Length: 388
Ligand code: NZQ
Ligand code: ZN
Image (tube, rainbow, N blue to C red):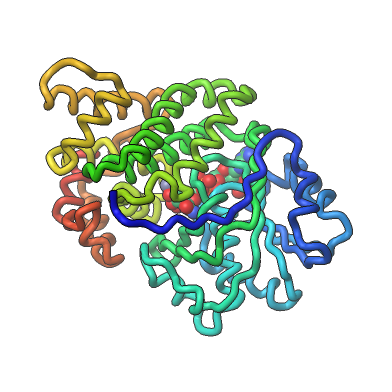
């Protein structure tokens, strides 16, 4: 097992009817800015319930954080934080609202040009860069990203998507009430299953380091997602299935799966370019790239792919090649069973677009990806070709 630090201070408040607990977990007398997305939380009445839970505190609202939150939008909220001396941010929504709020939290204390905060890549931003961050709480409405229990954010700027990781932006608390996700459209639920699945594989389908408990946690998450995936998409009010979906998504990216094991993230980095160039939802980009990446990288990932085939898909017979083939095919079929396309061409993206995608990867410094750092632009090109 590799050396690791594990730090995660987020208080999870899980279950039905727990919005009232916002009150005791938010500093008394705080001036609170509620941040949210395009209006789903307003329409469902959730924002009003959150305001009621905040009681007599002075409340401001900032709506309109778009999916794949944009720097320019978030900087408008930074103005509100500064002008109104906001001292607590309460994000209500999915990964985009929460990620955007993390960026607002950091940018509000950064002295220079806040776009500097987008230049750290997958390295964490040292706390002294901003010195402070506005504390954050969240009310999660979409189980997918794990943003409710991690310190990461992904921000869109220009023609790219940029990771922002800083220990100061772990939420203080997150309310995870599965019933708040019942209003999600089917496709967003499917996206959420796939995002959680691929967060897990990015930290599991690498090479063995004898991280036995990490492997078994990862396999438990993958098997649970496979078990409940179709049900939670087709039965939106099935509490048991959705509760398991929510907790899987949180566990998949709160640091526990990836502690002490190699991590890949190439599927995510290539997927980000598909979102930036064609506006394809995050989860759907992963469903396109992961099966193709596993095919192209099958020799590098051989030992873990066999373990995945045997332990997650219970494939016990056949040659090693046949087991790996079947595991990749079952992965693709699982995504498709949720109603998600797994080919670039099905999104109307032709092979002639691949060189431009590879150029964008280069422009964003994504030239040495994967758990071994040897996934070059040429290999990304091969993965994209395999994904056609
Ligand atoms: O904006 P509103 O009107 O709220 O509608 C949203 C949005 O259109 C809607 N929605 C959310 N909750 C709903 C709902 N509609 C009805 N009922 C509800 N309860 O769903 C749409 C998508 O929301 P979004 O927040 O964009 O989705 P998601 O949670 O999948 O977040 C995606 C973003 O997270 C980033 C992605 O790159 C992308 O920008 N990621 C963040 C990560 C992290 N912080 O650790 C890791 C991930 O890998 C990912 O990259
Ligand atoms: Zn993701």
